[in-house]
Length: 167
Image (cartoon, rainbow, N blue to C red; front, side, top):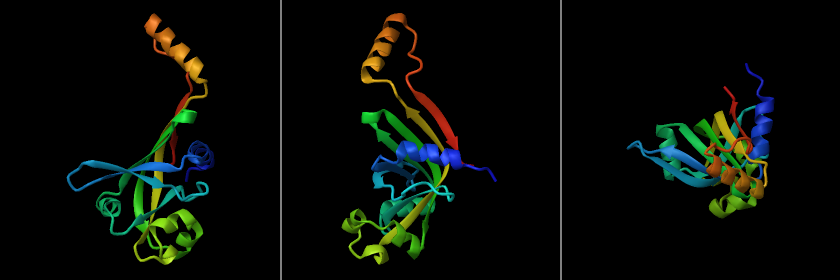
């Protein structure tokens, strides 16, 4: 089995300060639907999962039961950090994990707490992630884009682009 510790650490470094992910599922007609969801993790552990609370009666849970392949998009334009995560989602009945991840924000949606009958615990097993992480200042970026417009040559070295594979 592949040791993915470095990949998990890099991915967590990129997304840990991004409050919401756009969680994309596919409906019965094959159309993609995205909605903002809060990642509940405090880190990415060896289970290589990203954890979410959802409503058992909501469309996202129904859709991922029919087609578990999902995509998560994290974006922080102020830091020029963008991450797209592909994975497989499943709803799990794990009372201990619900309690471990529980927080005050979740209580706004699920007033019954971690034992709320409508609370679904969803784990996304990460398969791979692509990321774009620009380190250059806005001024440098604008200069490089202007230079590219004049020279006709696309800008290079405006940051890091890479892929993280978990499986």
